[in-house]
Length: 112
Image 1 (tube, one colour):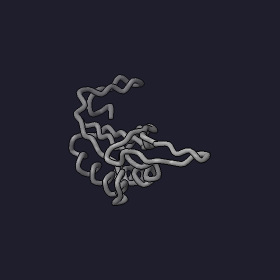
Image 2 (tube, one colour; image 1 turned 60 degrees about the horizontal axis):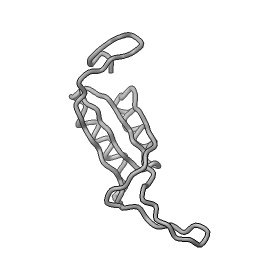
Image 3 (spheres, rainbow, N blue to C red; image 1 turned 90 degrees about the horizontal axis):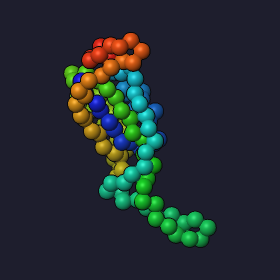
Image 4 (cartoon, rainbow, N blue to C red; image 1 turned 45 degrees about the vertical axis):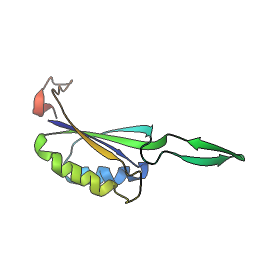
């Protein structure tokens, strides 16, 4: 079992959700996050004063899947989230040791 976490631009969320749904992904977790990478933030003007915005708004999408689906999910997220500009985001893939469905008590892949 794997956990795929993608940090994407907020306006790409619907595209990513649709791409994952076409693969038959049953559930995702979405979190509003802030951060920066190579973009290093930007400066803005507010009431005549210039200030630096260090942390940019992003969306974190997390999907728990079987190991056999990793390549498809990563490709779907990459294609749906790519704009070709700096700040498109990153995808992280990590192992899941154990999954437990609280309602039924199912464990392992059946709980996904």
